[in-house]
Length: 145
Image 1 (tube, rainbow, N blue to C red):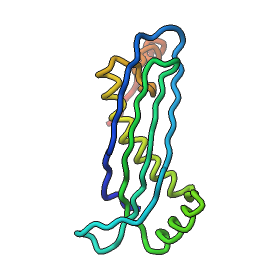
Image 2 (image 1 turned 90 degrees about the vertical axis):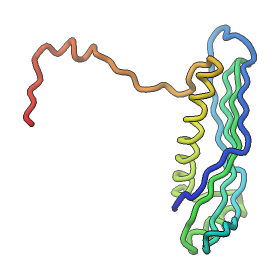
Image 3 (image 1 turned 135 degrees about the vertical axis):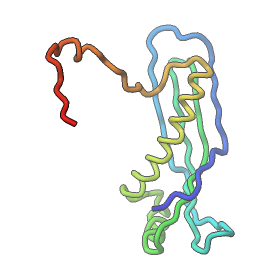
Image 4 (image 1 turned 180 degrees about the horizontal axis):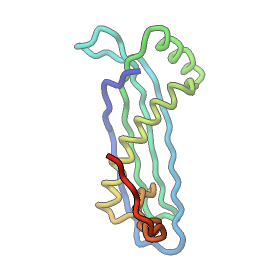
């Protein structure tokens, strides 16, 4: 698979009030459509994967939602298989994994930005530097370089 395009068609971010009590985050990602697309500068017809993503901050604190699409090239055999399975609204696990990873990467970056602007907690914990392990280990570390 070769991703040749990614676009958001709709981005919605709403904060309904102040946080009270325990916060519960729910994320939902959905591939809503797969179809052949045409791009004038490319001979092969790529596939267009439409998607919807929702991040709900419950109880009724905030909601982020995204709608968009990914354009990707596949070899002819794989493309036929993908379109055939999609008739039953199914996607092969290997393709689903690749497409979902692209969606997660792009939407999470945008969600971080929107959460910062709306003063929302991040929906995914970021790695944190912890110096506690350094304090416990008092022996100097050797380095050969």
